[in-house]
Length: 303
Image (cartoon, rainbow, N blue to C red; front, side, top):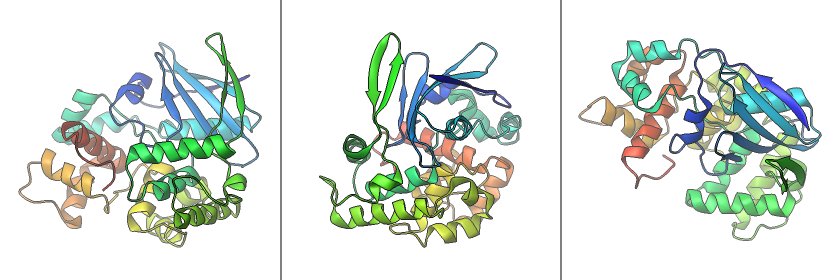
């Protein structure tokens, strides 16, 4: 077992990330325990898989226990990125002071930072699996894939020895012939995404370093990735903090609801409202989206 330390910049509360309804979208390999978050994922150099248990001390610093043989720096970057603590959040409360709607939601739900996937690869495969099926079905299929082809990682925590199998590395997914419960066309798309990950076309840091339009265009060239999925991968897979997921209908409905608009805003109106959210436009969008879903329990998880 190894250890890592993450010191968030700006306010961050692990319990808020852990407890906020909808904080873990279907397929994110994170489990909330009484005082920690347990994360399981393939390490993005694709050499191995890891399990990380993160806790927060009274000073706000995150301490993690790490199981698995992957590069500790890569594992730490993925864990930090998944909780959006790789960004400086010092200015996030100021967004709530500039925009009373966001401020009210921050007061109600805490200074939530988005919970993201551990890599663009995991986001893309999750969204493709989840197309036209429920979040519950998506989670079951991802669990099935992990059981079939995920790396076994032995973990000793809380006096208990357990073996976890994270979502499979792309090498394993690229070799899959079929997946029970998953349509053949989706299996073929997963194989294509796995090959793209191995080729570097789904490299998370490369994508988030590109201009947003360029990154979205690159993602749309991949199998099964359309406009909505590309936007979701960039926002929740790469953790780009200052983008607007314009194709997401539910987020657009949330803007209409919380801002008291007569109609769903068009792109121009939404972008105008979102000027006050910079440089955390994705964070504010996720807060609106999840608050809306919480008030509308019958709403589907995708837009």
